[in-house]
Image (cartoon, rainbow, N blue to C red; front, side):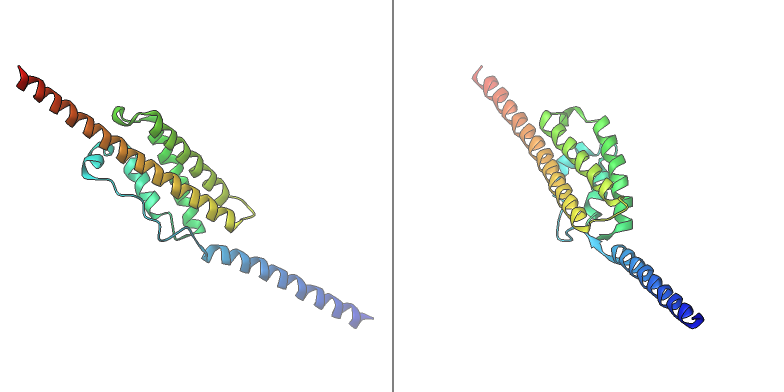
Length: 175
């Protein structure tokens, strides 16, 4: 009877260590996995646009985080998403007058929302890698749309300025 008890205790003890090993292994798999599309490229900003956004406090830091958030491990993703949340909050507080339009503001709100959702998803106790990937894809799309809108806005402003200058020159030449 004693041997049967010791034998059953040994079997149960081995079963628990196997379950613990599986939990540790699954946690390690999350830590070794990389998230995001490594082929995603944040649109570049032309020099004239860069001159405008340089005055925009945390924009360069946000841009750097957005460029490097893909293809990283979970721990790095947690850190970068947390930094992106603080950067986008700073960006929203001080929008330059030239960029303070409803279109750009709405794109900033979308980026803020996507960043917060990614940050929440990365910090959950029970991780869902598919959900994290989806949140990263959504964030990439929103960042791309923001950069495209900034480019288009400043390009349009430059065309309007050129048109006004041409009209002034034409009016002066007719006098």
